[in-house]
Image (spheres, rainbow, N blue to C red):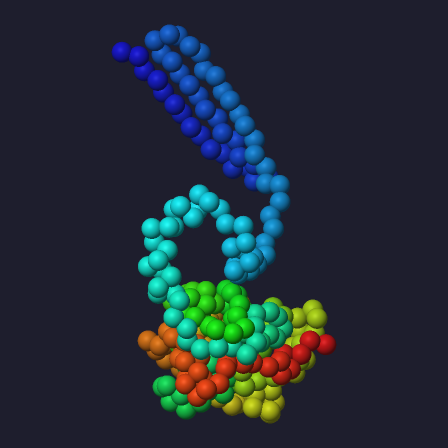
Length: 266
C-alpha cells in the first residue's frame, strides 16, 4: 500500500509574514522531501463607513436578484408598512447631526416609560446604520437605521464620572446627546460641558437614558461602566423609535429634528 504524508507547519514571524511549508513524503516511490515556501505580506488596510441606501438599487446584480426572488415578497410585506412621515432627511454624523439628535431625544423621552425624565439621552453614532428618509418612513427604514437588538438602559453617574464621559465623547469627536451641551476642540479635548443649562456638579447625581450596549463601556464610553445604578429594560430601542414616529403621525405631524449646537467644535 502506498502512503502519502502531508506535514503542514505555519510560522508567524515578527513582521507578520506567514511561511507555509508543505512537506510531501512519498514512501513507496522513494521520493525525497520537497519544500515549498510562499510569502504573504499585508499591503494596506482601510476603514470607513459605506452608506447603504436605495441608490445602490440603480444597478442591481441579476444573479443576486435570482437568489432573493423567492423571499422578496414575504420580506417586503413585513418591511413596507408606513409608520409616519419625516419632515426632513436625517443622517448621523459628528459632532452633531439631525438623526443622532432625534434618536437621543427618543431615548431621553423613553426614560418616562420606567420613571421620571432622564437628565441626558445618549446614543452612539456608530449604531445608526442608515438614514431617515424625507417623507414616508416605513418599518424597514427604522430597521435599517437601528438593526441591532439594543435595549433601553437607565443608569446614574456622579458628576465626576459624567465629566469623564463627556471627555470620552469629545475624544471621538461627538456622539448623539440630548439634555446636554458640549464645547470641544478639533483635536478632541473637552472645553466645557453643561447639563440642563448648568455646569456639571462634581458631587451631583445624573440619570442617563441610553443603550444596554453602551452601558457596558463600549464604543469608548468607558465611564458608563462605572455607574452608581443600572436598569436594563426589556424595551427595544428600535421599538422606541417606531413608537415616536407613530405617536407623532397620530397627532397629524411629521417627525423632525434641528441642529441646536448640542456639541460645538471650536
